[in-house]
Length: 350
Image (cartoon, rainbow, N blue to C red):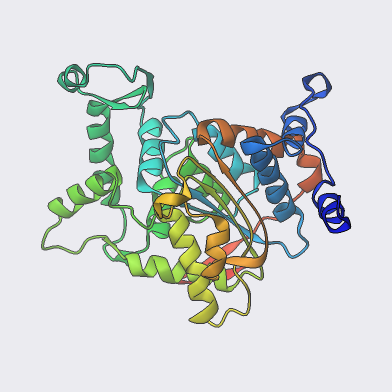
């Protein structure tokens, strides 16, 4: 064998795959560490935990953004997401409106019911039941939630506001310790939804609009959302992103860091830590499946970023990651919480 070939082989064959040994596991954190020494998506998920822990222990105290998309509440992840906020392992939440609406639907008394993907959907329609793959939700309770949101919005000052301010207002109206929005409001965590009207919250706002046509009313200012997000990014020395799913939250947070860097004078880089769980794939060219490496070409992810992208269902991956973080909490606790002091659309972060 030529020496050049031998040298090339030695350079590549430095670390072997280590089989998972379940007899040595004490907790889920141990399992994910073993995953990191295996292959395929198990390795990527193990690395994702490592990326998140690195962000939590970085002395530069990165601001961690959590992007949420997909049927996460129907999948049973409501309290997992709530716990991430309560523990302080994320600092800012950006979500689709649907995730937040279904959080409110459960706060108001709705439930998600075990169903079947093989159900007769015409029959379900007759029974006022909506299907999310193998889960049922109550259309009657959805309508009750829509009307409740419309009425609650009457209490908001009749002026323009960002989704961050409006969602904080909604969260403050409910004393539900299991709620994502209520927990974020109590902890002072900003929650944005850049496509809020593309959800049933938008239906509630439309009812509010209908009841107040021709009168002063709440106005959703989507461009102010952009400005407020960029304020947070511009004041953050370093940032990290955790994307569950993809969609608008992923694109919006990524665009925000570019805007902060070239339009708002932020002297920094793209996101320094990045991890994503997604079932989408890159070869269709869509944003949800686009790789974190591809984002480096746009300046959205730092050239030096620690990153991991795991292609798997969030209903499996996110509880494992959350459990791993909890099992390893001695590594990152206590973590200083950020305080966001808002004056109109400007924020001071302490």
